Length: 335
Image 1 (tube, rainbow, N blue to C red):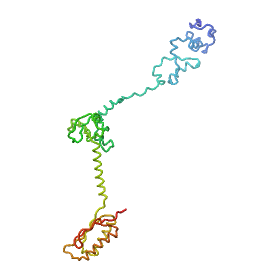
Image 2: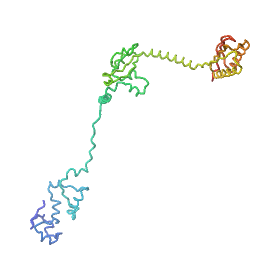
Image 3: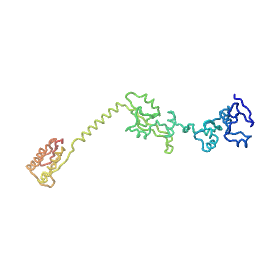
C-alpha cells in the first residue's frame, strides 16, 4: 500500500513521488498563484491516481472506445486524452444494449405456420379440397391417368364399391362393400373390373348422396374365348376386305364394233389391276336379231381379251350364246 501525505492544498500525494519535490507544473507559476485552492488536472499525481487508484466498482465500468463511436463523443473525449493518450484509460458510463447491437448476430426470419406433416393431415387437406376422400376414382381421374380403360383389380383405390357378380346386370349390384374384402374373395381366374366411376354428392344437381363406383366380376377364361372369337371374325372381315372388288359390264350381242372395242379396253384395264369383272351379254329389246355366228364372235372377243391381260375365268360362264350369258372373270393379282 502506498502511503499518502497531505500537502498544503489539502490533496494527497504518495510519499517519494516527484510531486513532493515541487516540480514545476505544466501550467506554469501563474496558474498556481491564481487557482491555489483547486488542484491541477494535468499534474502527474492526478494522472497516476486515474490509472492506479481506481475502485473495484469503477474498474468494472471501464470499456474501450468502440471504433464506430459517434463524432460528437470522440470530439468530447479528445480533450482529456491529448497529452497522455497512450497511458490514459477512459471511464464511460454503462452502454445500453442497443449500443452493442452491431456485434450481435441478426435474428433469423420468423417462420410461417408449418404445413401438414403426417399422412392423415395430407388426406384431410385433400378431402377438404375435393369435398370427399381422394382415394375414390372419378371420371376425371380416369382421364388424367393416361389409361384407355377404367382401373381393375388392385388398381382400384376406392375404399368401397358396388359389386356385380358374373352373369348379372348392373341393376343387381350389391353393396357398398369394402374393396379389399371383395378382392380377397376372388378366384384365381376371376377379375374385378370397374364399369362406372365414383360420382360425388352434389345437392345442387339433386344428388344428396354419393354414387359409389360399380365394379363387375369377370371370368378371365370366358373373356379370353370371347376375344378369340372376335379376333377370328376380324380376320375374316379383313380377308373379305382384302378380297378384290368386283366390276360389272353389260353389252348386247348386236353391239357395234367401236362400242365393243371400248368395252373390251375397259374390261382389260380392270383385269390388269387384278380386279374381278362380271360381264353380262344379253339381247336388247327391240334391237337387231343376231345369228349364232355373230354371237360366237362376241364370246371369242371377250375370252381373247382375258387371255391377253393374263386373266382367268373364276367359274364357267352361265347361259347360252345369243341369249343371256354371264362371264365371271378375274385379273392377275398385282405384285
